[in-house]
Image (cartoon, rainbow, N blue to C red):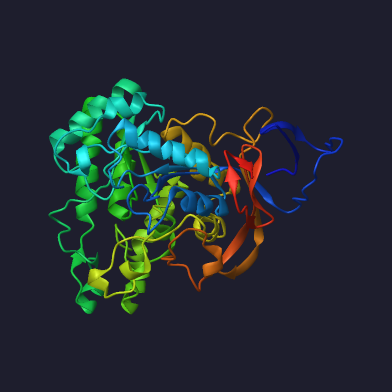
Length: 424
C-alpha cells in the first residue's frame, strides 16, 4: 500500500493524493496506519428483537465500529424471527437510529426458521430493507426440496441463500469436534461429515438450478476441498470462514471453558491450516465473524449446558492480522478484499466495501499494525463478554473508524453516541 492523503467532505472522500490540504480542515496524523475500506461482516448476530439481554442493535453496532466495521449483515434468529418485511424493516430502522454502522438485515429462508415452508422472500426483497441474503443460520435448511425451492426463488431478484451446513442427525447431541480429543474428554463428537455432506448436496442443487449459494462458517479441510471442486465446475458458490476457525483448535476444549464452545466446533490443527490455505488461494471468499453474544449465565456453566457461540466483532481484524498477515498468507490488499469488498458484493450492497477513491463514501478504518497487547474486557463494547481471546496477545489496534464521514471511533475510543451517522 502506498502512502496517501485523504480529504473527507460531507461524508464523501473528496480527494486522494499526496501533499493535499484544505483551509480550516481538521488534520489527523495517520502516519504508519493502514487505511482499509470500512469492514463488512456478512454474519453478525445482533439479537434484537427478542434477546436484548445478549445484545441490541445499538450495542452490537458499537462493537462493530470498535472493530473497524461500517456494515454488518444481521442474522434472522431473533424473536420474532426476521421472516417478514415488517421485522427486517424494524431492524433496518433500529440500525439507522443507532448510527454507528449500516445494519443490513438477513431474512430467514423458512417461516420461523423451522424448515417447513418458505418465508416471505419476495416481500423482504422488495421491502425498504432490500434483503438479498437469506439464511436460517443456527439451523440447517435440511429438506432438499425446500432448499431447492429457495435457491430457485431468490434468482428472481439476484438473492443468495446462505446455508448453515449441519446435518442435524449426524450432529445430534454433539459437543465438540469428533476425534481423539473428544474421546479423551468423554464428549460426544461432532463429525466433519455433518458439515461436508450438506455442502456437497447444496453445491449440486445450486448447479442444477443455476442459483447463488453461500456457505456459512466453513470449518473443515473436507469442506474446503468440496468448495474448490465446485468452483472448478463453475458452480456459483461462495464461502466464509470465521476468525476463530483460522486461529483456534479443539485442544482449547480440554479446559472445559465454555468460551470455546461454538457451532461449528473448533476443529483440528489440520483443519485450521486447510482453511487458511483456502482463504489464501481464493477458495474461501471472505472472513465473517459469526459474532454470537450470550449472557454470562449461558457460558458460566457446565460444558454440556452452555450455549454455542463467541463474540468476535472487536477482535476479527486483529485475529486475521495474526493468522493470515503475519504468516505471509495475505497482504493488506487481500484483507480489504476478504473483509470488505467481497462480502459487500456477495450481499449485493452498493456503497459498501468500495475502494478508497475520490467520490466514494467516507467509510473506512485506520488500523495501527504495530502494537501487540493482551485482549481484555475493555476491548469489548457490546453487551456480552463471551470472547475466546480474553487474556490472549493479539497484534494491532483500530485507531479510527469513519462511517459516512463521521468518526465512530476516534483515536481508539468509541464515540459515546451517534445519530444517523453523525456525532450527537
